[in-house]
Image (cartoon, rainbow over all chains, first blue to last red; front, side, top):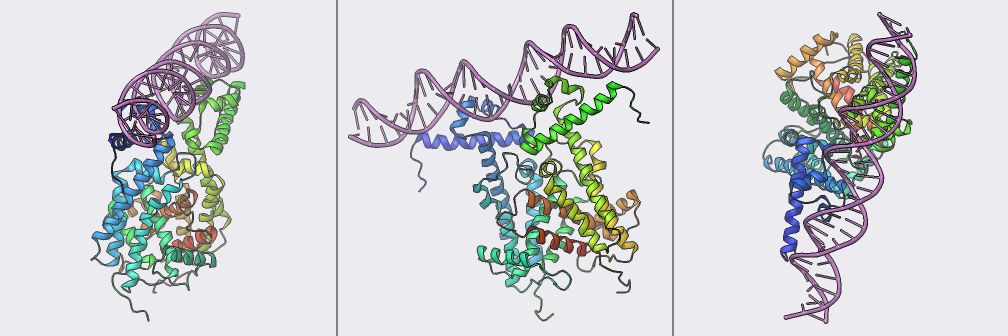
Length: 241
Length: 241
DNA sequence: ACAAAAACAAGAGCGGTGTTCTCGTTGTTG
DNA sequence: CAACAACGAGAACACCGCTCTTGTTTTTGT
């Protein structure tokens, strides 16, 4: 399949990687808006025009970094999912959320790149939607496993009934993803997904300054509440109750 | 106090406003990263260096826009708060949240400016923290009024007890803001605040593409659930229960 | 094995940017 | 009315993304 044919192809892969690496370094030092193709090239001992053999434009380079970031974050989330296989559903949920937050705190600029305002034009290229969904899928997997274990309760619709359109979206989503999950739980799951990133973004972007000091505790507590809200329980629940 | 003394001062105010207005126009057309001082000056028939009599740098101009945006958003939220004075607490909560989302959908680029990744250096100038808190304060006001009306229930701590540090933050916050609000409700309130913006950001930044179609219904439903989670109820609740 | 083709790096150059400096001009104020 | 501060214009500096041309080097087809 991916047998490396010659020196040229090998070099191309290495140079491409080196460019992305240096770009990430500059991202860390300066932030997305300050990233400069010329500076990357300079640091690599190239001339700026040579870079265009590897990336068609600055936005293309940014897109590559975005995809890598999504994948890196997604991998961490999936690792947390795997490693917590033996724990109870609530703890798995917390583990995945913690992994996401941990990655965000460790790579703040890359986080800003993917969950901040869209820096390039405006359209997220199609290549990004796959990697972008990995965290969401990990969260869904937790709920799915909880459901299989009988530890997922459906939301009480007597207090806030699920609107028709939302139910339709949930249906479609369950069908498209082919997951064994009650549609009634999906709305809460999607909401929790967005809310998780709201929490992390506020922490990272400074909105919690002078508001929340005990960041770790606050996050864990809120995320546990989120799990409860989604319907995930520590242990099986009798369907009659 | 602010009596306009002469033609010069009058002109300064007008030019400053014109610059911000044109900058906002460009923001709407291009997005934060594409905003150019030179283009603003050009459009205003000035030369770029003249702009520096009004704003010390491009980042300073952006900061001014950020403050204006926070104020505009905050005002909409406060108006929703005022106009819903006669309704029940849950509906007030929803009204404020809807106002925030409505403003965001009407001013997507300004929203990205304030709740996307921090574009200037990294530090939000101190001038922004006041205007930035207006939405949060509006949400707190809803909870406070609900509490006064006996329509606020405290979270059930048997399922997820509030950590010590979080409780301390809540205490401090209630004291600093001088609000008549049980500290036990504050953690949920802050979380709901962040989660609200998570929802809106995901919708605006394209994360709900191919996931949520019924955006209005989804938002209303989720936000109602958020109110319930915070402890806000439609009508007074007996403290014994 | 060798010629044709493709990939590559370099350099110059275009039009754009933020920012600084200088220099007349024009309101403001003692 | 003179001294002063605010102002607008212009030139200049050091960047930027990007394109085009020109040689060189590697790959490929015969």
